[in-house]
Length: 547
Image (cartoon, rainbow, N blue to C red):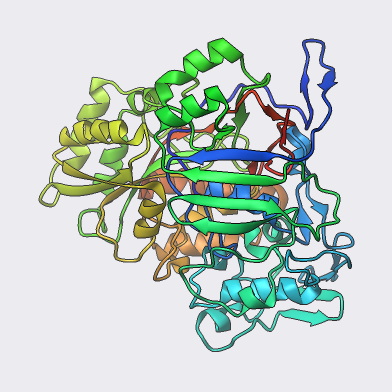
């Protein structure tokens, strides 16, 4: 999923948070405090989420909300650390029955789950989610995760309304694939595939629904775009997940400076967009790390500069794309992120991801020789020398854009910077034919498999009219074929093949200039308790309580 802010860069060698209601002491034990029920928890964002509609939401801040409101066949537990990334049945009675050929998965849906409307969750609720996501009118980014279901392409092409490989028989849901799917269960735990009610199933508006019914511990009661989101307890929820506070209020639009002041004073409880990068050192010194107020959490992610290979500047121009990789000052860009400002990289897959193998194709700390190499590669390939860079208004993106301008001027590119609110940047850059040459991006793993970085972000066969994740618009038939082949493999062969793809794309195609791996820096109020950080979805809003 896309990172909400390109400011969230921190180091990798960090302590993990502990579970709800406690913290690790120096001796390694857990000190617990009583969980207080009720009250209103206030979250602040500088800019809005992209959507709250589960079929369209694809932003880290949005997925924190989706984790609190959705119920799924399989989900991740309300735990911190390694346990938080272990799949377990939620609405399914257990893990599915899988056919001998590995293509057919049959789930049994348990009774008792209800939407906030009181309507029961059934096997059809999950089939409806899958088919809605596949509908071409919705233009859901979930289509990248559905293509191996039998009949999916017919729905994508408008030839059918439902996928023939998705069938319901009473409480049984059966999903049939074209070929074995090593990562299907992890995919189904993504928010795209949570249960939906009939009203949402019938709505294919690509602008999304602002108050969809939900079957998790909470639901979205109200949303005013660019202003507020109100989340309240689902009174029909009887599942085992925590639901401590009565209401979670999102306030949208304050600057990072004001948000930090509000969290310091307690008028807000969670700075979900972060604080000014220069202030993390002071916060760390004052409160410590991973104690009660300031948390630093690891994340499988990558920050990168995407080059639009469908535009004249970079189309069939590998030399210039490689020159950009040699020209950018990764260290200087990282320094703008402030304290705990991270780990430099030059490749697609992050450390810790299965299939990661260090590539070392481009300089992490730039020298004069590197600039000379960039100039040599760019010579004769700048095609007029004009470029448009899209970036966010959120700190430190504007300062990083100035560094990009300076770096790229040295290889003959005159870069015009255009800034947008983060959600607007994502929406605009995802439209096929968008008028940018560069865009600054960040990606966090939907689940721990290299498919989610290589295929989802770079497979040209998945490009659609809008909501594209492949914002380099990279469409190379040879690499598309290799990605498709890699997705069918299992075990060590799968991961070594993806390592080769990472290396070859980075060195020989260079649709990106990757620059850093990231984690989250999280600042909360003195009233915040029960802090739990899920490795997949982030801050666990359901588990939070007020002291």
